[in-house]
Image (tube, one colour):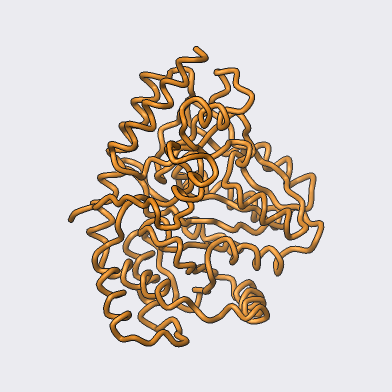
Length: 381
């Protein structure tokens, strides 16, 4: 199965065109979490047939669509999903916003685990809830949850909700079952709901494994997911959730209907159904390519930029670079100015001394990016 890299310049893409319009055509973008690969040919063929049909009227998600999700979680993640548990929406973050509004009240406290995906901060604050940080900690070179700190927080404050990144963006942890089970036990003890963002679930590198939060059998867990990251279709705005709790499902569906968000994007729904039924071989080939890129980026950074602390990504196509030892006030700005590489700023993740690198690009571009970072790194070491 062939994985084809694509030059995305001049396609109105956020990753390249938006950044170069702002900072110049010489900038090497290595930031936002989508990939420079052409999607699976089965998805393209399904799109061609739909386009040739020539009508793009209102559509619905079919029974086959829901069966595809249930089969995928059963086959890929070892958990049996009832179709009635599945909820729909325009994407993981809009769905999360709706859930925050129906499960908490303005002023309530919500736990997140920095450094973490920037929209987690935004979705809490913009919906007038308050952020409580349960920061990850480094133990033997890996990021882990600080569950002792979390228990102190849950015991001393009335926390209704925790948002989990699983696998974790940006540090790349594929949380183990034992870690998730302990988290579930704490949340059960203190009556806290868990929303588990599992959008990177299929991008995990051997010998590591993805464990869905559903496997903990915690009653008050909500999983959100999408085909967007795994199959490179995030622009098609389609998401789903898995919610065993009937009350939570009802509250969410009422909110979805209140905002008239029940009609899906034709191509978003079609892409997911085809991806989950016809594109498993393509995904395996993609993982091989991403694994090679991950190893190259990780080894290059450790060997050539040893003062940058880089954890090995167990999952995702993203790499967290802790630049604390470089003495830089703003690493993202420094690498943009001196290397002409645009990275995600760690400040947006709650850790200003870090940056996030996206390695889901062609190997030639990745080498250019890393070589440019090395030249800038040499200026301060």
